[in-house]
Amino acid sequence: MGLFDWVKGVFGGPDDAKAKEEPPSETERNAEALMSLVDERLAGGASAEAVLALVADQAFGEGMESLEREDPAAATRVWRRLMAIAPDQPRILEPLAALYRSRREDSAAVELFERLVKLTPAGEQRARVHEQIAQLHEHNGNLGGAFEHFQLALANAVERKDLWDTCLRLVGQVGAVEELPPISVVAHTPPAGYIIRHSLGRGGFGTVYLAQDEALDRLVALKFLHPLHRQRPEQVDRFFAEARIIAQLAHPGVVNVYSIDEERALLVLEFISQGTLSDRLSAGAPLHLETALDCLVRLCDTLSFVHQRGIVHGDVKPANVLFRESGRPVLGDFGIAGLGLDAVAGASRRYAAPEQLAGMPVDATADLYALGVLLLEMLTGAPPPLPEAKDEREAWLERGLTVFPAPLQETARAWWSSLLSPTPQSRPGSADLVGDVAAAFIAGLDEPSSVARVLAVLLGRE
Image (cartoon, rainbow, N blue to C red; front, side):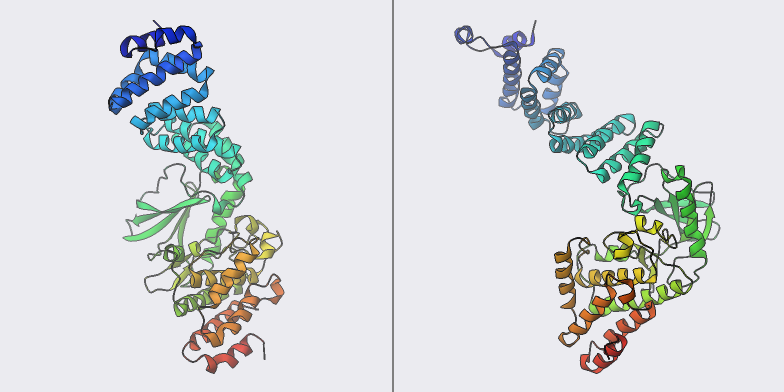
C-alpha cells in the first residue's frame, strides 16, 4: 500500500470526481498526502510525541525520501510544518537543514545545524554536524567561522586525520593566530602536582587554565599550546621563546613565569587575579579620565623597562593588560615579542601600527602607537574601528577628546597626533615621555591652565 492510499484510508482523500478531472502527478499526490497528514495533526493539536511517531513510520519515511528527490521545496514545507509542532527534535532538524543546504539556502541551513549541534551527543555524531557548519562557512568565505567549527568537529573526533589536516590548512589561511575563534580543541592534562580549577581564556594560540599548585599552595595559570600548533615546530619554538623573554623581565608590571613543560607544551605562569582591561571595558562603559591616564602611566613604566632591554611587546591591547589586587596593570602575552616581521601576523589589527600592518620591521614606537589606541578605547568605552575605516576612527578620536577639560583638548589632540602618527619617527621618543605627558595631564585636571606650559614643553611645542 502506497503512502497516498495509507493517508487516504486513515484521514480521507480528495474528492474522487475532482481527482478524475485533474489527475495529479505522483509527486503532487505524495506532497498532498504528506501535507494532509500534517494538517490533520496540526488541526488536532497533536503533540511532539505524535509527530515523532509519524516520522518513525516507514511509509512516511519512504514518501519523504521520494519527495525530497522530486520536489525539495514541497519537502521543505512538510518538514517546516512538523518543526512547528516539534521545534527541537533532531529527527526533524537534520533533514530540514540538509534540504536547505541542498537548495543553497546556506543561512537557513547554518541556523538549523547550530540548533541541531546543541541537541546532538558528543562524539562522532556531533563532529559531523560541526563539519557541515564549517563547510557552509568556508563555502561562503567565512574562514574564521569555518575554522571554529572544524576545530569543534576535531574536539569530538580527535582521531580523524582529515580534520587535523583541514584545521592546519585553515591556520595558514586565517592568518593572525591570536584572533582565531576562542575555543579549545582537546582537554589538557596538567603535570603532577597541579589541579585545574577552570578555564581562564582561550585563543587560537592556546588555552589558559587556573590551577592549584599543591606543593606551594598557590594559584597559578597554566598556558597550554594549542594542539594544532604542536604539529608545527616554528610555533612550538615561538611558544617557549615567550617564556624565555618573560624570564628576563623581573618587573611588577610583567607576568612572572615559574616553569615550562616541553612534553606538554605548557608554561606555568603567575596568576593575576583581577581580570583584564578587556573585562573592564566589556560593558561598553568608559573609564574615568584620571583612571585611564593612571593606567597609561603605569603601562608606560612597564614598557620603558621592556624597551630598555631591547624587547618590543608587539601586541598591546586590552586582553593583554591584567590587573593585580593592588590595581596595578600588568602586561601579559609576550608571545610575539622580539619576533620582528613575524610579529605582524600575530598582532591585533585594531591596535597595530601602520608599519606592522605593512609587514615592515617594528621598534618600540609600535608599542607607543598601540598605547594611544588603548587610551582612546579606555576613554570612549568603544573598541577601535578597523584601520581602513578612517572616517570612523577620526570620529572615535573626537569622542575621546571631549572627555578632557576644554582648555586641554587641543593639547590632547596634538598628543594623539604624535602617538598615532603613521610615521614611527614622528611619535614620542620613549615610553617614559608618554608617561610624563599622561602624568602632566592628570596634574592638570584640576587646574588645566597651570600645566598647559608643561605639556607644551613635553610635546615639543615650545
